[in-house]
Amino acid sequence: MTVGDNIKKYREAQNISKEDLALKARLGVTTLESYESNERLPELDTILKISTVLDIPASELMEFEDENDTNIDYELEKLIQEIGVKRSKLILKKARDFSEQDVLKAMNLLYELNQQKK
Image 1 (cartoon, rainbow, N blue to C red):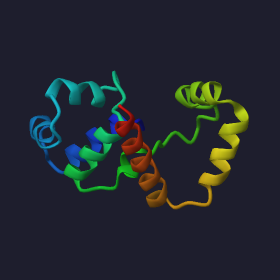
Image 2 (image 1 turned 180 degrees about the horizontal axis):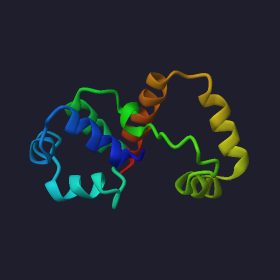
Image 3 (image 1 turned 60 degrees about the horizontal axis):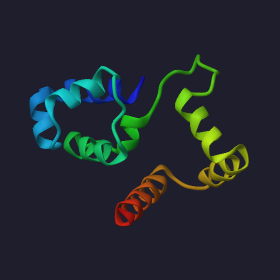
């Protein structure tokens, strides 16, 4: 499942309308629809807002359930190309040592640092 599929699944499981989720997460309904239809991928801060409204860990929205796919995700492949194989391996090896909560905290910290630069 994609992030958009997960958003839709959890929203529907909680009987929350698109309009209510969009309002509470401070998104446009059209934007939310584009996420749920997989036309767009939400930024990390948006995933965090949506997960807060749905009262679930952000990691639940970011989980992919495609066990039959042995190919590397296109986005992951592009990121590896951008930062290089050596740095990618280093990051992934270090990531094994951290819990999901630790990774989300690190992602939030990186996001905040990036926002301060702007």
